[in-house]
Each structure stands twice: as C-alpha cells, then as structure tokens.
Length: 272
Image (cartoon, rainbow, N blue to C red; front, side, top):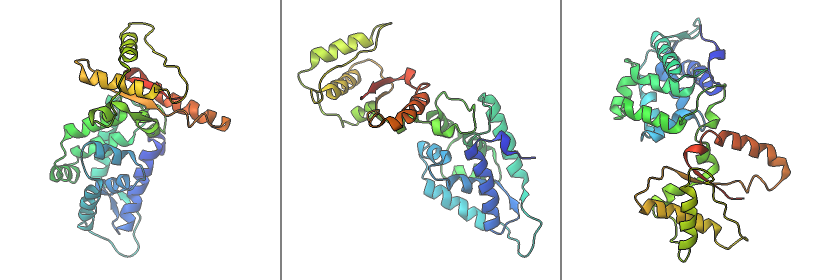
C-alpha cells in the first residue's frame, strides 16, 4: 500500500504524475519509466537539478524516457484502472532503503532518483546509454542536498539555499569574472588575519556606499585563490532586497533559517 504520508510533497507529486503518465500513454501498468517522466516534467523539480549536476541533459533524458514508453504495450477500451507494476514497487523499496541509510524521516525525490540505477528493466540501461554512473549520480545528490536531512514534507525548497539567495564569489573568481582590486592590500591583509583566528573571526567592513566595501571582499576571495590556502565556498548574500519593506521581514527570517545549516561551511558576506 502506497500512502502519501511517507512521501515529501514533491515525491508524492511524482508518484501521482506517474499514474497520469501511464494513463495518458494508454498503458495500464504504472512502471518506473512513468515515474521518471513525471519527475522530469516537474517545474523546477529536484530530479532535474540532480541530473544537471551530474552532467546529464534533461531534454535528452526525457526524450529517451518517452521513446521507451512508446515501445510498451497499450490497452484500449474500459480497463480496471492503473496497476502498480512490480518494477515500480521494487524501486520504491530501494528508495526506502536509501531513506533509511540517509537518516531521513520522509521518502524524498533524491531517494527515488538514487533507486533508478537499481532498476534492471529501465533505469540501468537508460543511465548506461547516457553514460551516467551511479557514483556521479550520488555525487550530484550530495552536491544538491549538502548535509541536510529530510525532516518534513517540503525539504526540497531548502536545498541549494545559498545558490538561490547568494552569488558564489569563489566560482566567479575561478572563472576570472572578478575585477582586480588595486591599492587595498592593507585592508585585505587585515581581514585575512581576522579570518585566520580561532575565535572572534568575523570581520566587519563599515563604510559609506560606494567606497569599495564589495570590492574589498572580492579582493579577499581572489587573494585566497592565488595562495596555497584552501577556500571551499564564499557567497555574497543578497539581503538588501529583503529589507526594502517591512512586509518582507518574515521572508528574510525564512531565508536565514534555510541558510543556517549551510553557512558554517563557507564564508558568507552580507550585503546590507
């Protein structure tokens, strides 16, 4: 018996969408290919983000899935309704195992995605044709999910919070997109000294608008990348848009709540 109480909202939408996909294809048995189609067709869906991180083109993935569906037997006339296929049931069981291994409370989209390589009928061959390894898929899930756990039925909105609410200065610096900072060596050196402390290591840069506070922060990141020091991530948080009107205070609070579990593993620059 499949109950929506054990799924996250997005994962349950995928299960319901799989039934609809089977019905639209005039196929009585709901199988794993219908679930894949439903997950890929979710707007801003987590599955699409995971596959993108893994280096797979979602359009090609959806096209391959549609081709497989078109090759399956169809029924005509009145039927007794959709039937859950054995491979679909096996995929759900494997997804439940991933949920348990990851210490989650609800079955989420990433658990379903991780279970597809174990599907011998459809998933294995699909990923093999697209040259997507199981390791690459797990790495992509880890990159999107981070250290978060599924403790409620809407966890997907909390993933990649920094990417949604900030600019990755580290990546911009690696790509050479940050302008060079000239004549601010003393300030940059002082900030790095503060960051190197074990305690009291949060530098505050104060000044009037337009004096170069943001450029100073960009200079710090570039300095790190040019040295032998390791810098994982540095984000410029876009808070100023949330403080424009008092009606958005609750939105700022919710955003900070999403960021709170991610921030300790990176430098967070608040642009107030």
